[in-house]
Image 1 (cartoon, rainbow, N blue to C red):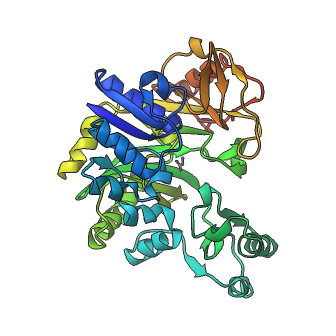
Image 2: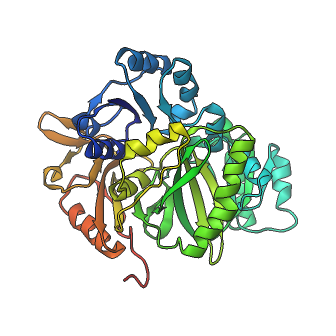
Length: 416
Ligand code: GLY
């Protein structure tokens, strides 16, 4: 079997390692891949257009393509591959708008009665400013386009809100993605990620996870692609799961079917849990990064079977090890803004599995940093505390100039 995996981060390395763990004779190809994926498979090159990827897949008789990164989805790669008779897992262009177009997505949530924070849509700066004249509550101001995951500003008073509107709508910090905006009620709580696989008829949820999005400890500082992840999410209690199923998962499935947004692929629910309720903040139409790195080491079944069963509308239960995982992301100091690369990484050869390369490559005999997020180290244990200890013990083995990581991944009050 020949599989092409699209993306170049730790997530893609984790998908590749899990597929090989389940079936070692598989041939993996990655575009663009990274230093880690180049060891377990073949990185096919850089700067391919979608049609060049089609050509590659045809020429090399690729059996299945798995889309890791959203960049490809928003270019409509699934529709194009399908038109050429190629098997690909991921949403078609219209369904990918659930991630790529926030107004489309929030309107879908509203139409199907899905629990989501209240919101208003604006394309006129003056009207948006006027919105705050009568009363104020904390808000998240979001660009319509996803702006590389950056187009969200929180405002806790009128001045912050005005400044955010100016940044987005007048100064155009996020370009055209800020032509239309959403002002959303800010909900305080604990974040959770639930990834599910969609087979056109059922949405089958994975184990829950908690992503650590901010660069600094205690969720302070700038948003990042994710600085760590824990699975299962300790805030996802039974009653929160029931609430999620009834008020988010089931109406989402109803909406997807009614709107003819069915596809074979992953649907990720970005959630906020309050003391007694769960709200849907956003959909992503792919597996999360670093959620994949924390979840896949806990998956008991054959991942390819799970993916392939989705093509046959077959409801396949996913079994998980009764264990916990904690993934710590090692990054280059300065990320998510300016950072240096090209630093020699020491200690990689002494790491135990599971670990995943995100932004590192091998040059001659040395591993060197090549991106903001460099390495993902995962601890697996009976409790989150044990998983966390294993992960951080391994982190101590790695050294490079300007190494940065959060020290509070998997750290909870009253931890057993
Ligand atoms: N971890 C969040 C994301 O993948 O977008």
